[in-house]
Image 1: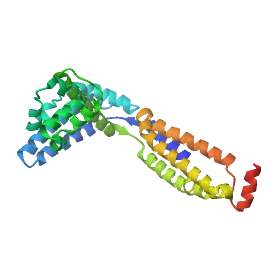
Image 2: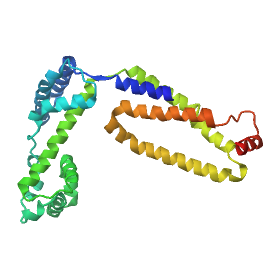
Image 3: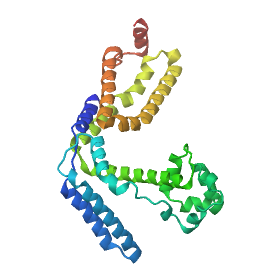
Image 4: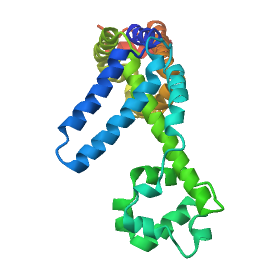
Amino acid sequence: MAISLFASSWAFHSSTYELNNKVLDAVVGEAVKKEDEAADPDARKAARKEREDTEAIVQALRPLAGKSFKSESDFTAEAARLLEPLVLGKSDFESGLSPDLRAALDTDDPDTAYSSSAAFERSMVGAVGRQSFNEEFPVAGKNALRKLRKESFSSREEFMKAINGFIDRTTLNGHTGTYAKMALNINGLMVLCAIVGFIASFAISLGPVMWAMFSEIFPTRLRGLAISLAGFFNSGVSFLVQQLFPWELSTFGPGWTFFIFAGFATLAFLFTLKFIPETKGKSLEELEDELVRT
């Protein structure tokens, strides 16, 4: 398992982020194809707008073609710098609302309604109802309200500026993340082999053997309680790993994340060699006597 994890770590550490003109041209080509296939005038108009936006983004990212970046953060930082003039300050949250929601913005008590995102939501729900708010209010707007929940505002203009700013930043991050995936250059075969190797190694070692070993190494009088405690601890560690894994990926990147797990796998291997007794060909009584003496 450790070897597979180290291989995954090496594959990610050696990966690069490289955009090329062929990929960028393909993105524009897909947008043009979508516009050509639009059936009705409204769909064609929307597809035309999407194609124009795509062409502008691709043109802004052309300077990255042929450049190589060692990490996703380096690539996204440079891509964000190029795309900021196209994205930041362009959102108009109000224009995307339905007529009913847009009319509800003109409240009789703007100082209260726009003092916070929670007050704004209460005002909108009071004007159009919860069902209409849930169905018609844009998803980007709802995300912005959740993000800005702890902030307070002194005017409608300040509130709307914060909403539009959040949507701008979310849009920018979406663009940089999308093109980072296109730019990723990694040894996919090595990653695949490492994943298959890890699964196979686990399936013939810690996976099934641990539970068989528990019934052999604990004394008979304590076996039930000991296996329960060991299983509880194992489940707790598994839960902790699942909670920490996304954070590690976002903080350290996949290369260092797999390196950390490889280090733990190596420690587990060394611990097994030194402290876990061989149980093959021994009765439970013999194992109990041996472990008690140890």
